[in-house]
Amino acid sequence: MRKILIAIDGPAGSGKSTTAKLVARRLGYVYIDTGAMYRAMTLKVLTSKVDPANEQGVTELAKKTEISFVEGSDLRVMLDGADVTDAIRSEDVNGNVSLISSYPDVREIMVAKQRAIGAGKGCVMDGRDIGTVVFPDAELKFYMIADIMERAKRRQEELSDNGVELPIHQVVKELKERDRKDSTRDNSPLKKADDAIELDTTKLTIEEQVEIVLNYARDINVGSEGSVGKEEMQRK
Figure 1 (spheres, helix red, strand yellow):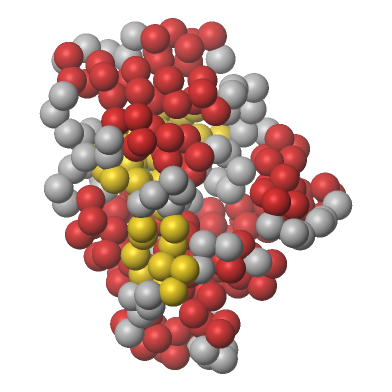
Figure 2 (spheres, rainbow, N blue to C red; figure 1 turned 30 degrees about the vertical axis):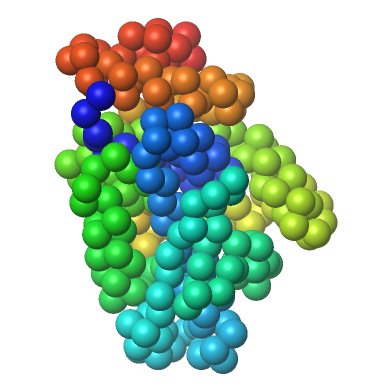
C-alpha cells in the first residue's frame, strides 16, 4: 500500500486521538498528537513563570522549545528531553492551552514542526486544524464529533485516570468553553474541512471508529470510494 497522510480533526472528547493512535499502529504509520504539542508548550510556559497572557514572551519561549514524541508501548511526549506525558494533562494546562494555542506566531512554529514530521507521508495526525491548515492536501480527512455528554464522560474518565476527580457538570462546562474558544479564535479555528468525512462517534466503539478510518484508507489505495466505511456512515 502506498503511504498517505490521514488528518483527523474534532473537539475534545470526540475520540480523535485514540482513533488516530490505533489507526497509525495498524498501518505502521507515524502518529502525531498535535494537541499534545500545544499542551507541552503550555506546560513550558507555566513552569517557566512566563505570563500566559504575554503573547510576545510566550512566542519567544516557543522558539527555544523542543517538543518530540517517543514511540513504544504508548506514545510519550517529550519536552526539552523530559517526559511530560502525564504532566500535560493537568488542570492548569487545561485552563491555559486554548490561550497559548491561539497565538498566531506560536501556531506558526508548531505547524512548521508538524509539517516537517508529516512531509514523508505515512502519518496520522490529529488536532483541530490539520485538514484545514496544516495539511489541507491530505489524502484522507475526518472530522469527528460526539454528543456533549458522551464527550464529558470520556473526558471525566481520562481525568480520573490521571488522579483528577471532577463532577460531570463541571466537565461539560469546561468542554463547552474550550469549544467556544477553539471555534471563534481568529487564527486556525476549529472547523470541518470542506472535503472531510464527518464521523459521529457518540454510539461507536473505538474499534468501530478505527475500522471505518482503515476502510477508507484501504479504499484510497484501490482507487474506490469507502465501502465498509461509507456504509457505516450511512447507517449513522
